[in-house]
View 1: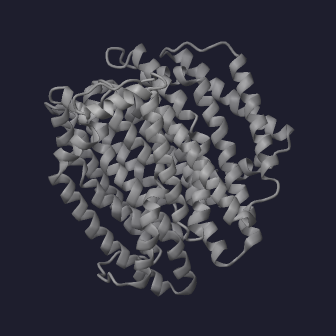
View 2: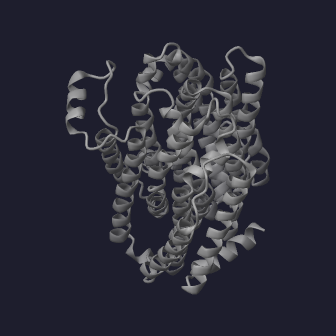
View 3: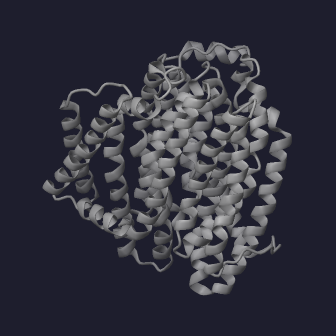
Length: 530
């Protein structure tokens, strides 16, 4: 599993680095109203990908595919082709409906854009360009499930790199050649989707999973897939639902609010994708196989090791982002003061502080969800999603200050204004997202404790304590150092990199002093990655 996690983590690291470069390009080439419109337009098909693609289709597909592979490779191939065909049809229908209904969808998800002339219309145009992405990504999700079940992780994990490259190229070409430069990003999304599908074809053939049209909607395993996907659509993608609520509310908070939250969230996605998602992706086939073979001792070891490795990476990442948030944004994003100046740096850093509080709860939720899904239990994650969504909506409305808009019902505004607890603005949305993530983690943790206590090792609390103490030692050392200036120059970037290296060194040394088993997992992970 360390080898698989290293493969996924390495590919995701490359994707995140290019994604960071992409975001820096966008932040310094386009004004905030234009990026607001694109981020909302891309969010809607990307949300569908997280919900129906990676969020439910892939995670529900892997346990079923793993079971079929243990019985018959021919049955597994047939199931893959039936799912590929149905996914293509459903993805195409949704893409076409989305193109036709782009305007009402834009008004639904970002009604506050109507207050700025031309902003809503731009969002509608971009949305029509982005919706075909759903068709391609549905096929990529089916391919990802099949390849992951066969133990191949590289091609699906590297696919997002193509999206980032396409968007970087689109940003440059748009600014150079188009009257409305931001529209080039919509065309880049379409090209990226096509390239991502083509990337999966060779490894699929190599693993005897050649795509083919096979219409068999009554296939028994396909029906089981549908029953698992329905609750998993909520359960595995609760974070995305919370982001959707945040984007909706931030559309009422003026130009830049959507973009500031997006850039802060992208920095959270860096450790989340490189560490947590990579480990989660690698662990699901492993958990599923152990559940199928009823290897309870190995499942306990695998679950405990996976959870602790993910936590041991997520906790110092969250602490480091909090302590270095302003220098990070200044060094990485502030290359064009006329577009992304000091005010934007402080605004993004403010949102990042509150987003980072949710990184550890999201990590716990992801690993617990995998254990539930390995037991083909998708109802518990769905219930956790409902809890999290409820908490997120209430917390957002209580923390963003008093809303004022003629696009919202007057009775709703009166209620919201009367119950506001704090005026954090767009940062309140980030804080609410982290509170909701904590609620989801508590719910799923209680489910795992009640139903799968046999999968928990007796030393988990001791290991968590040692990881927490090591992270605290790192935090104390970084906090004691003189503050870095929030500016963009070579010296500051070098000093920032030095702080990251120092923090990682102190953390690993503390793990060694405390004799934490996670230090051995880190060494194994690095060896596999090398």
